[in-house]
Length: 387
Image (cartoon, rainbow, N blue to C red; front, side):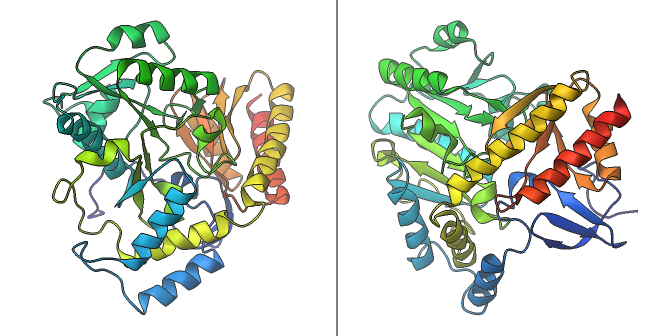
């Protein structure tokens, strides 16, 4: 019997090695990995630049307290702010911590400017913002919150894409609207650009903040952030997963306006922003910022779309919809998604489920067309088997 607490329904398989788009099991079997640590290994397994960076940094310095200036942290923060809407970055260890920081920053801002009654966050049904208590009740999915009461207050929820309900829910206590630019666990549901623009306008009209959760989708769409193509600037953006390329790293990006409440002592993290994590985060940006890299992600996303849509057209009773942008994809299935995932695994391809009977596909950003063709071939084989 395992001594590991049973909070995961684990598949009976273990891996000894990974390289790029592939994982190698203990029995030697080779798997095409389109889970990639759940959208985390954006540069695939054991990317040479990341491996070298970790080796070199590990021989110099792993961890010091945030009581001191950390040069690697200063550099990563500057690179993030120079290339985004943000003026400041708060480093964390995970996506849920970045979400918690976002909530604290929003509430503290209104407290600082003399409006402490504005302390509630509006969220959307089907969202996922992490597994701390506040993040759980922000999303308020009964499957995740059952047994963890009493409910953490401070959140109001409305149906996804219901503009009328959203406007009605805003009141004098509303501090912010928080939404995933692309809902990950909720089924790879993309918030359209016009909706993002509408949210920005609504927030400006009603004196509330806009928090865009990009924990799962940052870097993956072919833009640095998924919201960028909408042409607006949010106030707060929590990110994690891909920004560390598989190394634990989260961050909360904020503009100057909302940062005013976050003074020394208002927030902290023992491990957040440590030199080793910062070195890895900078190494990921070294690759992401190479000329043409993100444009290439867009092109590969289009190529993948074409192949997936051909399968959908050929098997319209199996696949109902292709979702996503760039290299964050979702297949809304018309057959059981869990059964489909099992059969893909039999064909040595790894994927992961989401709500709305969706299968999520997270190829690494360094995937090549041959590997995308391999994925398309395996998906088509399972479609044929289940027809």
